[in-house]
Image (cartoon, rainbow, N blue to C red; front, side, top):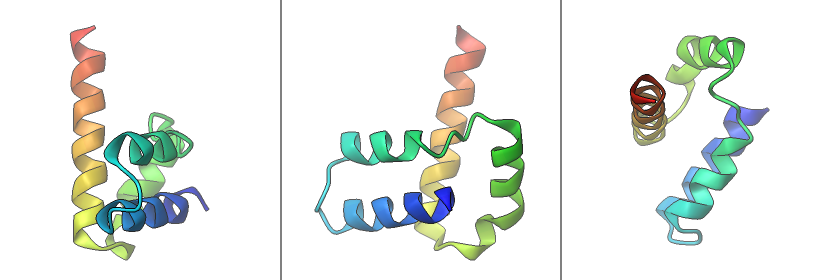
Length: 70
C-alpha cells in the first residue's frame, strides 16, 4: 500500500538514511493529489505516527498553496 511505502520512506528519513529530496521523491508515488487517495489519507491517517501525519499534511498544504498560486 502506498501510505505504508511513504511511512517507511519517512522512517528512513528520520534515521538519516535518506535526505529530504529522496523522501519527497519516494512520496511522489503516493499520488496524494488524487482525490480518492487523499480521501483515503484523511480517513486513515490516524493509523500512522504523529510526525509522519504532520509531515504529509504539511506537504499537502504546501502543494495546495502552490496549486492555488499558479
